[in-house]
Image 1 (cartoon, rainbow, N blue to C red):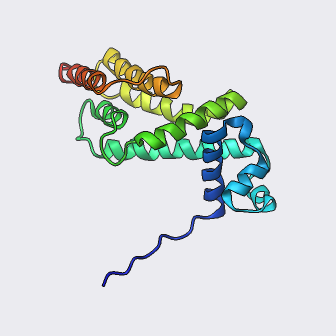
Image 2 (cartoon, rainbow, N blue to C red):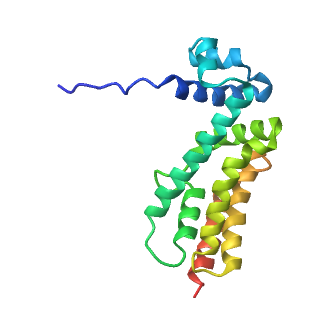
Length: 192
C-alpha cells in the first residue's frame, strides 16, 4: 500500500504572490487591491500588510519573483547544454520553444505576460528586475563564441515570440514554430 504525502502548505508570502498573479490574469491591474489579494490568498488584510505594505509592493514582489524564476529556468536550461560556443544560444532556443522541464509552458507564459503588462501599466520601472535578467542573457549570448549578428538574431527572435504572446498579436502555428526553430538552429550550425 502506497502512502501519498501531501506537499507542505505554501507560506503566506507565496500564497499572496500567487494570488496577485491570479487576480492580474483574471482582472488586470485594476482588479488588484490589497483586499482582493488578501481574500484570494486566504489571509487577513493585516497578514498581507505584514508582507506587502502597498499595491506597489505587491507588484514589486511579483516582478522580483518572476525575475528569479526566469533566472532559475535559464540556468537550468544552460546546464543541459554542452560546453562550448553556442551554449547560451542553444539554451535560449530550447527554453523559448518549450523544450525540457525548464521551459515556462503555456500557463506560466500566460501568467508572465499578464504580470508584465500589469507592472508596466502601473509603473514601467517595475520591470527593472526582469530587464536585468534579459540583459544578462543578452550579454551571455554576445560572449557565447558565436557571431554577434547570430546572437542578436536569436535574442530578437526569442524575445519576439514572447512579445507576440504578451500582446496576443498573433499565435504562431506549429509550422511557423518549426520553421523558426530550424532557421535559428541552422544559423548556429553555420557558425565557425
